[in-house]
Length: 211
Image (cartoon, rainbow, N blue to C red; front, side, top):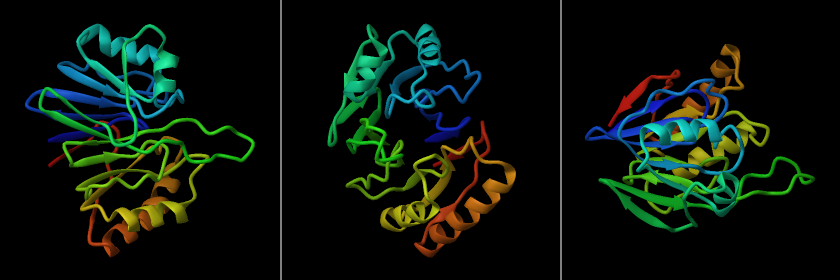
């Protein structure tokens, strides 16, 4: 499995030359010309996770790719076919196993209505929770951990890592951080990952992790 981190929340997972794309959002000014995409997983409706022009570009090159996301994502994308997913759903697509967890986005503020959010685990190896701290049922080998957002406190991130205890962790959802911010947050995240027996890896955009 080859996991590639791009800007912010955009991830690709490649196995045997086939690809699953997760959360192509608008914090990527451009996205790669992905080939052999079999699935697009969208955790929720926010533009930094499900940006229609990027989704359309992926589908232009990969018209048979299946889209997975919560019901609100299906409503947002209109006529595009979306397989609506719920907590506990399991799907198999061209050698990929996709397991979905969670129901709601973390609270930004009590005045802002909560929206749907469903995280995804790929082949019981990579877990990405979207904008949530949902803990999956299975042990996590690789955690793509959100590290910066209006809804995030570093203490909650550290508690989440302690609960999940991933074998390997890399930060994602971090386009809002400066170099100083990365250094500060990564120090705390690295410490708690190692305290719980895991390995911390920092990936810059377009860097990959081979599992």
